[in-house]
Picture 1 (cartoon, helix red, strand yellow):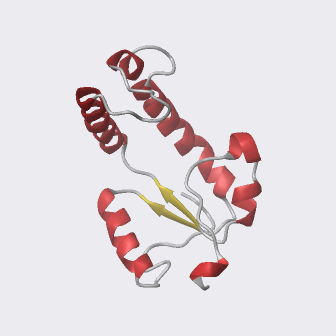
Picture 2: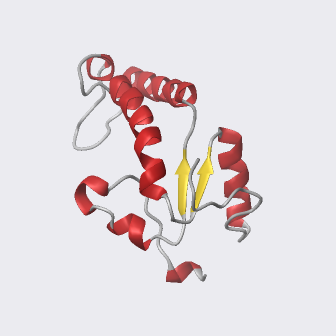
Length: 130
């Protein structure tokens, strides 16, 4: 595939687009990091943004209250979606071309090979998600 002939999408757009993206993707890369890795990264990023008063968009800034308390708090959302995705995505992705990366090292290694034109590299390519 030529780079100019494809597209890359980042995120989960099922709520807005249904299965349109999944149904048309040639390859799905599921970055399925351990919850501990996700939470540590979220904590570092949130603390940095809070300490530096970093503007996110349209003047919005993170607060510790929004990060830590309430149903829509960042950390509660991260935990909830982590387990929800692990429960639902295997059936949603069944029968599709999927590479599931489960550690930061696997992500780094896969990206290195991907940038060299080896789309799958040495990683498992499966249509049946375990």
